[in-house]
Length: 208
Image (cartoon, rainbow, N blue to C red):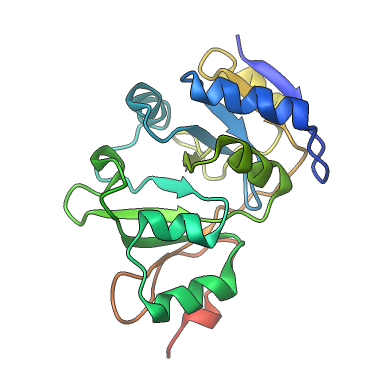
């Protein structure tokens, strides 16, 4: 049975954030709010929790997972970032973007795209997510809370609890945070490529 924490969207209660981080460190799967939509998160090194996300969302082995990072310096630990890309990232983080980048050796192989050795990374503009990342002291392995057969991610934390109470250890109620997933941009080539249009505006990245 999942625990259910009601956390203030602007001023997250430190006590609850500490408890949430502890659940994640112990192998728990958490549904939590971001600046685009609710997401599923687990500890970066937890293979079992990762497989539970794959099963829940019916994801294949080519799915690009995302590392949710607390800031740009942490992001740069897990991705190869040259000066040009760094400037782009600096101007658009935190925000509702997921960036596909070449992974460094710090990324567990099971999180990478098996052929391209890439990883999705992002820095959320959401106080609850950022507080959780700060308490964890490392990225959160994450995936949009988009269930099989659904067109949009889940938005109501009470619906999330009712649907997933036997699949996750924690649901964080941070209020309504939107329907749109992040905009996904591939930065592995010379020209940024739009992979998925979401909440973030692609125009600043479009060289045309």
